Image (cartoon, rainbow, N blue to C red; front, side):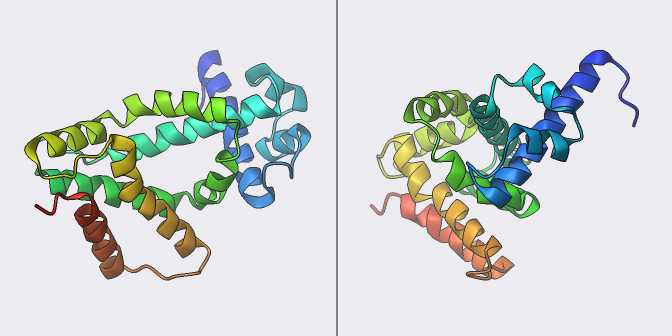
Length: 198
């Protein structure tokens, strides 16, 4: 597919730079690559990187936000607002797992992203909340109905969705093998972990 407009070409270059950064970050860690290496990996001149990003830190911060946006888009691909709470939750988990399997570099970068400055992480967390609003609404609905335990969203997320990230990373590193049966059991267990036992 030909990229025709200037805006499309610029967006394509930006995406190529972000992809290259994700790959290098996954392979070499936070301090293991330079802007020059990013440019070479992306197939652009070094100066081109600076047209889109102030510096290396800005590049990594924008990559983190782009990854969050990608994950949110993937998570709600099959979202059905009319489905039961459990079905919506399972759908999000299944889509996020598939995203992890399709984008192993993201899993390997997660630990690196966690090392961003706290102020940056807080800001990005606030921005991400709007992207994950359907899940927040599910949690709110579950608390109101008594189906879910009365904990804040971030606690429910940590008890449930976060467990998938850890398991997916271990799966990618060949520490544990997760087949479809185990994945289903893990998702069901994570759902039970946030359900109100009463």
